[in-house]
Image 1 (tube, rainbow, N blue to C red):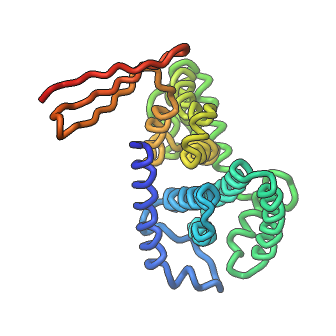
Image 2 (cartoon, one colour):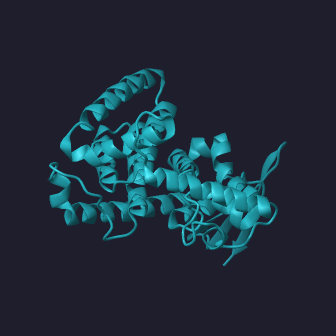
Length: 308
């Protein structure tokens, strides 16, 4: 119950922010003749985009689980708002997770429709990339492919820089692999002074070593590995998956979104102790405590009456 309150609070707050973002950048968002990265007035564009990803994931999931087509209507808006920030990594995660939600949540017939829709969406994206307003994304994508696959003579400096920073962080990790070099060691001790690894795996390993890296990833992975958690908290399962995947692109362990990790971890641990509930009888003026003791073999209940 408390986990659902956290989830709904995050979604409601992000919805209000999305509405304000839409109003603030309305002219830029409807002007398709040119494109510039939006969102810098609020925070780093990558941070702004995360909220739109969470909304896209949530509305996709609940539109399927609750069979409400109306919940699917805002999804393209959230994807476009994410796109407007110019965050390639978040846009990639957003599209990937929408696809995974559809594949893992829909039944067999729905999966076939999802695959057809995905193929059509890819074709639509390729067409849209040829439009003038998509010049920024087309250039970035072309340069990324050129950098890593040698398809052209251009280099995406952002991708190269991130890759180099991650390599430097891994080198730093091998100097003190067990407990690491200390907080903020990557910007202090690598050649990219003042910058971080742009990869959460590399950053945690360099700063805190393998012991704390294993602990952090275990806490994050447990909700993903437990089928019961996914069954009972499907939307939050995909939140956890998003946080895990996004580690490839940026450092996340100190960001607000990672504040969700501990509640998710706590909710994924199976309850083994007694579960307490209480009810008040106004006519008999007594409180009834119902204590359910659960074990692997038997399940029994003890009732306690307290006279008032």
